[in-house]
Image (tube, rainbow, N blue to C red):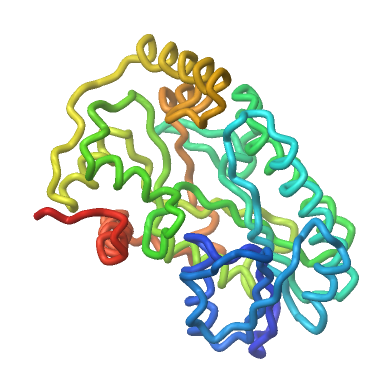
Length: 336
């Protein structure tokens, strides 16, 4: 176990939803923080924080190595999360080659801990009665999404590096909601709901967690947990109907009422794929995402709760914080 002596940290790709919350959690704990961002990243949600920002590309080894000079730990958060097109060489390059560089850099500078931020999708999902856990075999290859496949491949690289002596630990968040979602990412669900664009719900569901809880879990991973182990950072398994009801109640808007069977959703996703390919435009929902929406992707975070002391804040808190931040920043118009 690492003794916390206010280590100097390098965090890659920390300007998004998770990174913006993670940096605030780490700052509260008194760490010295260096963030590596791509040139041109506005970093508007973190610019006011007491952090050092260096510009560089994780695919450029020398830039990465220079950014890591003098640090005690690396939190590798940078990733390409694009799911369109489904097969995307850029996504594979960032997620796999970027992780290879991160591991080589970590070994070169002799970090005390390397925290790799993966995704729960690298484990097999389950249902309400038997949710997916850290040893459930990977299932998402059937969707043929380079995002999921590349994150799975990257995780295998980190596991192997830990077996070869790197003090690495892997954390795997589920679907996060909370403030500072400037892109926006998960907050798109709230935007669509506020604009009345969600008229129905599929039969599937997924695991939700407040992003601030994930930030605590990652920060705790710097001195808790076992080397070489993976930890699912999640909380509530909810059907889409249940999730939309919670969101609608907080936002004071109508919840979707129409159940959408798979025989409607899947052809719609296929049609979107075809039209997007012809028009060169990103589809609202692709066929792989339509398939995912019709299935239960449920997980258990019991291991992270026990070993990383992962908080389990009710998801209503994350929904409200996301909604209020988006209203304040004019991403959602509040007419109530």
